[in-house]
Image 1: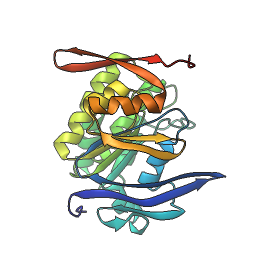
Image 2 (image 1 turned 60 degrees about the horizontal axis):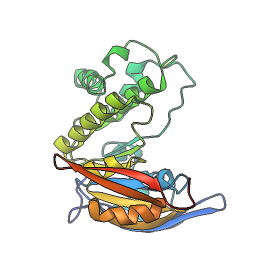
Image 3 (image 1 turned 45 degrees about the vertical axis):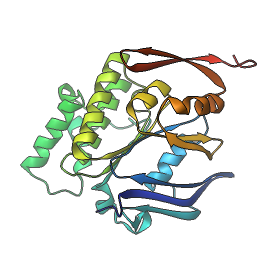
Image 4 (image 1 turned 90 degrees about the vertical axis):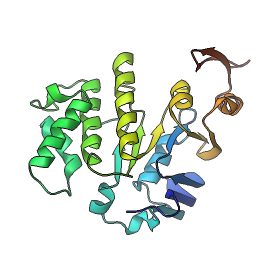
Length: 263
């Protein structure tokens, strides 16, 4: 699938209704290879927007297209070859072999030795190789997160120009491992030219590692801006905090303090 004029994904007045709650309308383009962080207060609709982008939530109004094609017109097998989703949480109801869970990312591909090798390589990249002979029963939240990270690696391993959507990918991991795996995720997407869209709470990570910020508040698009120090005043208004900036070795470090009236 080839994006037209560099636009991989387009939302045009896209709205969804969940019960009595309406999200949107959202209108923006995503360029091939972009790295976009979605930020906003808790309950703002960040995960809902990600589900709109993935096609999990059907739009009540407006349009969503991927590579110039309406998402609803794409067959699931074709969509899975270019779009992978790493959700915020994972159901662990059944004891499934870890190797099988990672292998789910290869559905729709031709089975064979290459797929088996890709599953092993994906597990290694996600620091989950030692889990390959276990089942999901008894895995910790962090271990399960690594297994599913390996699954999306396997899904987009041998393609280029895909779209990877991740929802708070680091929350179940300790800080050291979280940073290491984000670096691996970042390198994985860059090497293959994949577009990365991530729901985050970490403003520091968003400013340092992403090109663009999509800011959400109360189910609406609050701002769409480049990821730079110039975005800090907008972020302060969005989160109702004050950010103090510190510079060291050409890196920006920020810490938040509550504005008056907020604890």
